[in-house]
Length: 316
Image (cartoon, rainbow, N blue to C red):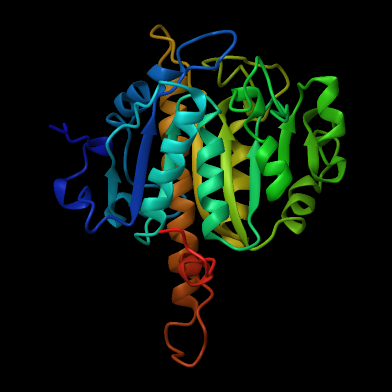
């Protein structure tokens, strides 16, 4: 029997699948990580932190939880990396087809292969916005194409991939990445226009995959492979807010929280980041709808109009 999970202690009326606009899929998978283990404990730490978070967002003057946040049953497929990827793919696609705003929480980054596959099948001309310290573009690693080091290879072949904050990679990945669409951390600090440049290269529909190690270890040490020289809180939010305002963000995932029981701050940052991204999504939607509320002849350019942009050929 399923034990119901409630995000941030919200009232039950806002956590029902039937009425919730937001879906949160937990995937506590850590089967291919190669250094510090513990990403399978990330969702539990995230949920504990969220229970201690204020739910009024000052910046957007909103309480986004009132849109409804439903947490699905946990995906516990661990028989093989490819089986896990397919389980995620099917579950994500199921909820996209229920007209929900789907979010996914890892787990390590290999879970994103299935998520991206599902979104790419459902949305035309998809941009994958990848925030990460690592390129994750290996075609295969340690005998598997479903390793965390391969998390974005498929996206590089099948979607418009934009990579932000990269500062660690293997030399073989140079032949796969698109230099015009990769924003290396050491170059971003001297480029006042990197945000606008990245936005200009995105299509309308955007899926965000956010590896927490894109952040500097001074604020996010709790990852499997922390890298120095990362992004900081305010610049990250500035960029994400622009993306949500200017593009149709169709979903997102957060991965690679490897909690340290002696330091809860990164867990709280992660919960705050998740809630901020939801706040930006629905603030942008409501704001755009409100702009033309008094003019019924004007077509509303709402981010949540993504449902009209489904690909025609659905697999179910």
